[in-house]
Length: 358
Image (cartoon, rainbow, N blue to C red; front, side):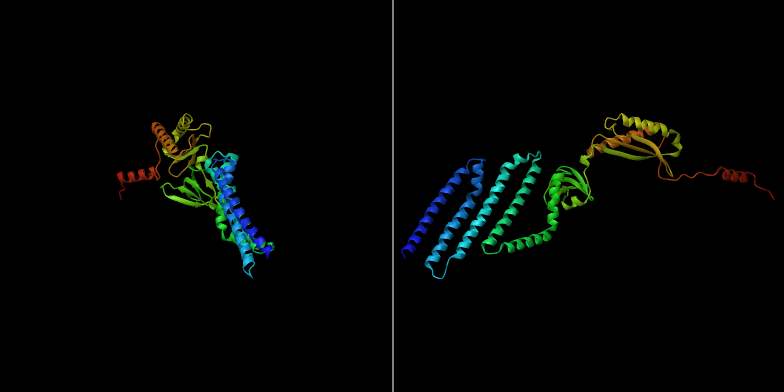
C-alpha cells in the first residue's frame, strides 16, 4: 500500500515538473522566435506549437492513463497511452513538416540562386509539397505501427494506397510532372506568345497543373500542362528573325521587264535597314502560271515582334509595288485572256466585202 501511494505521489510530482518544464520551453521558444531570420528563430517558430501539443498530450494523457490504471479496477489505461503516443507522433510529424518548410522558405532562395524569381518560387513550392507528402506518409505509417499493425501489413497498405492514388490521380500526376518539366526545360516564359496544338495566346501564368494564356481576343485559356508534353510548342519569341515570303504575280506581257524588276527589288531589300542582310535574300522569277509569271520574294526582318514585322512587311510590299509601277509593268489578275484568231477574222472580212455571185 505504501509503495502504491509513493508511486501515485511521484506520478503527480512528475506531472507538475513536466508542466513547469513545458511552460519554460514555451516561453524560451517564444523569445527565440522574435529574433528575425536567424536559425534559432526559424526553428523556434516552426516547433513551438507542435512541441506544445506533442509533449503536452504525452504528459497529461500519460498521467491520465496511469491514474486510471491505479484507481479503476479492470482498466489498465493502455488505450489512453496509445492515444497519447499517437498525438505525440502526429505532433512530431507536424513539427518536421513545419521545420522543413520554414527552412526552404528562409534559405533555399540563397542556395538555389535562380535568376527568375517566379521560377525559383515554383521550384520551392514543388519541393515543399513533395516533402509534406513524404512526412505525411511516414507519420501515417508510425501511427499504424503504434496501434499494433504489423510492419508488413503497413507496407502492403501503403503500397496499395500508392497504387490506387497513382491510378486515381493519373491525369493530375501527368499535368504535375509536365509542369515540373516546363520549369526545367523552359520552352516559354510569362509574356511569350505561344501556339500549341492550335491554341495560341500570351502566357500569363505557368502553374504546376495548368498554364493560363490570354488569346488574341483577350479570352483566358487554361491549358493542362500534359498537352505541352505531347504536342509541339511554337514560340515566336525565341526566333532570331521573322520571315517575309510572298509570291507576286506579274503579267505575261511584262516578261521582258521581269529581270530588271527582280534586281531592283533585290537591291531594295539588301539596303533596307529593317531587313537582316546576313540572312538569305531571294528574289527570283520562279514559276509559270496560267495567267501570270510568278516572282518570289524571300527575306527576314531583324525584329521578331509581330506588330513591327507587320509594319515592315507592309513597307516592303508598297516599295515593291512602286518598283513594278516605275518599270511600266503591272500585276496580273487571276483571269484568262482570249485572243481572236487573225485568219478567221480576215476570212470573215473578205467574205463580207466580196460576196460570191451565183
